[in-house]
Image (cartoon, rainbow, N blue to C red):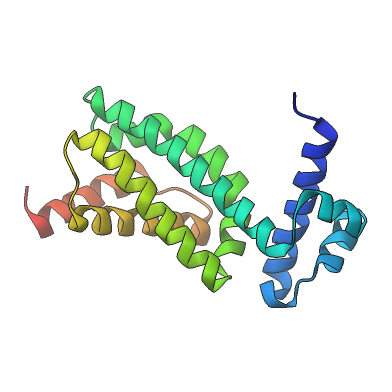
Length: 183
């Protein structure tokens, strides 16, 4: 059974860390800063995390877990014969809610060079696993790189605009990709 006090403390520490990284940069953030902002003792911080690097790893893994769950839902819809733009529309309310929750942690991770690379590699691995299920065949490196780029572009678009592309923009993107790569 989850101890809600532990969960609440984890959430406060994570939020404080993300805010501090966005405000000051990862290198300038100390455990003391995180503890002060979280209003917990350093001892409490260390009961939850080994250091700020371990906290970064937990946030990174949580982002990748969220992405994996979202992709599994999208794959399920695609396997039911629902086209990509309709699958996106069907998942949009949930994606909006999740992106609102994850936008600041993703922004923070993207400012930490090593974590950004691990995030990109994790996105690529997660995409590869889910794409193989959707395609029912091994995916190519080209597919993984192009679709991964589109996914990162969608995440970046959301982080910059704080909104998802409209269905017209999704259709236009699809048409452009078809024009460039053929049908």
